[in-house]
Length: 365
Image (cartoon, rainbow, N blue to C red; front, side):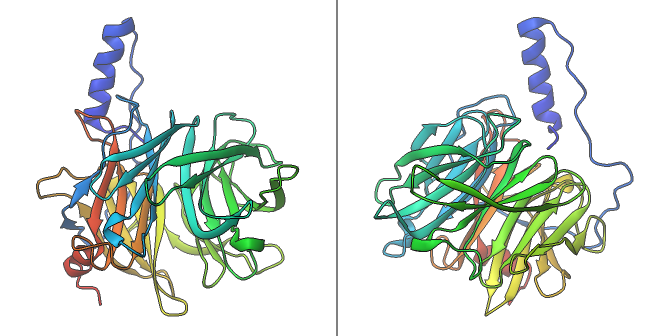
C-alpha cells in the first residue's frame, strides 16, 4: 500500500527530527489509471476500533469477524498490527486482547472447529516475521472474554514471504474435526494450500501450490462452491477452482473502469446469497473506495466509500471483512469492517459499517 499525504507528512517530520535523514518519496497510484464510471456513494461508519499500538507507521492491516450466535451484539473482531501481533475488539471498538506475535499481515477465522479435542474458534494469520519462509500463525479466540491464545507459528514447507491469508472449508478442502484448509499467499505470487493438524508432530502439510505472475495479497474462499478469489494488486482478481486437481487462474475482474477497480486491489470479502450467488466486495485502494462485483460474472453492481458522520472515513484500505446476519441493533443485516490507513493523529485502526446502510445507499436487494 502507499502512504497517504497526511501520514507521509507526519512520518517525514518525525524522521527529520529524529535523525535529520531524507524521507523517501511516497508511492502513488499507477500512472494512467482510468477513473471508474460509477461514482462511489458515501456511507458513514457507525464505530471504530481503538488504534493499534504501532504509531506513525503503516501497521493495521486486516480484520476478521466472529459472530456470537447467542448474543450477536457481543460479537468480536480480530485485527492485525503487522508490526507487532494480533488484537481482538468488541463491537464497541474497545480492545479486548492483544498477543505480541510478530509481523502478522492477513487474518481469517473459522468457528465450529475441534482442536486437540476441544471446540474452538480457530484463527490463522500469515506470519512474515521470517521474510524467506512463509509461515501460518494459529490462535484461538475465547468468545466470552475476547481473549486470544497463540497455538504456534509453523513453516509452510515452501519459500517466499508470507503476505495474504484465508481459510477454506469447502467440500474438497476440509480436514477432519471441521479444521479448514489454510491458504498462505506469498509476495512472490504463489498460493500455498496447507492442511492443518493439532498433532504437534505434523501441524502443517503443504498440499499444492498455484499462483499468478505478480504480487498478490487479498484472498477469500467461497466455502459453498470451492472457489478461491485472489487479488493481484496491479492487475485485478483471479478465480481458482479448488475442486480441480491443479487449480489454474481464471480471470474474474480487471483493474480499470469497467469493474470499478483502481490499483492496488487489496482486501476481498464475500456477501453470499443462495447456493452460489452473491457479491464479492473489493478494496479499490487507489481511490479509497470499495467495489461490489457479482459472483456470477464479475459485473460491477455498485461502489461506495466510508465517510461522513461523526467518525472519520477510511483511506487506502488494505484488509476488509464482511459477515452477514444479525449483529445487534446497529448492524441488523450484517457487519462490514475495513482497515483505515490514515487515522491521524492517532495510529491506524478499523472502521465498522452497517451492511444494511451499504445496501440502502446502493439500492441493493
